Every structure is written in structure tokens, then in C-alpha cells.
Image (cartoon, rainbow, N blue to C red; front, side, top):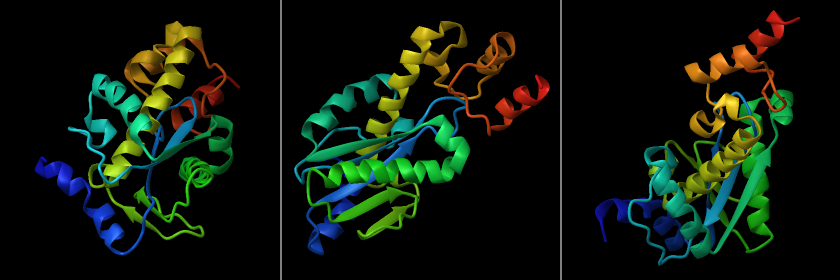
Length: 210
């Protein structure tokens, strides 16, 4: 077994030694984009799980993420996905919306198995289970890394569907992030449903058109 794979298990192994059995990792995708939901996943992996190359989804190529996505879902003990709308993001802010998406994902897992511990990527969670926020957790915990892939690919697929409907915006390429091409498309074609109205570039467009 490669060293980095062994290291990714360090948090989970320590918790197994403390008597915890079902350890979930949770992460979100989509804080930065101007459009679409924020998506979180919670994933519980079996002790024998092995996936060579698994790490923080942002460090993986799109091709690798797409390869890992079905494998993780198939081999996980349980997983859940939480999706929070752009309207809700505008209502409560992206930080709270990210936390809400994580809690939705966690609750879906709890309906499947007796989850007894949660590791999160940097986000402190306040609920009735013991949990630990880990800075850059998606590169330090295998459960969080797996959740990061599920969250990222799920969100990418949502944006690819949006691209089918509005190809002129280029959502399949930039996934809603504020790239130069995306900002130019907004200027040219205007706003469509799903933009986050509290985000700077979108607020600016709305103010200009008042």
C-alpha cells in the first residue's frame, strides 16, 4: 500500500481505535461559483476500501473524478448528497448554506446506518454527533476525500445539464466560476435563473440594470 494512502486513513484509524465504527467524511463543492447550488456529500467507507490516487477532488483531473465517482458510490457503506439552492444561498449566505448542505447529506447517511462520528473539511458542525473539522481535510482524510469527489462531480453534472439549456454561457467549461469568459457571457446575454444575486459580480450587473 502506498504511503499517501496509508496517511489518508490516519484520522479514521484513530477513531476506530476509540471504538467508533461508522465514520463519515463530509465536504462541499461550489462555494465560489456565481450560479447554481452548493452541493455537499457525506461518505462512509469500509475499512478495506482502497482507491489508488484518491485525494482532494480539486487536485484530480476531471477524467479521474469521473472514474472515481461511480467506484466510490458502489463501494461505500453509505453516502448522502445535500443540495442547497442559489435562492437559499442568497437568503442565509454561502457559509451557512454549505453547512446546511452538509447536514442534509449527513442526515441522509443516518437514515441508512448508525453513523457515530463525522469528519468535516474545515467546517465546525454543531449537532448531536461527535465531529472534527480538519483544515484541508479533503487531502488528509480518505472519507472526506471520497465525499469531495461525490460533491464535486454531482455539482459538475448539474452545471453540465445547465450548459445543455444555455450553451452560450459555457457552463460545461467553467462550471459557473467567475472566469473572464463567463463574465463576458453575462455581459452579452444577461442573467438567467439560478444566479446568486448576493455575489459581487451579479450584484453589480443587477445594479447597472436598475
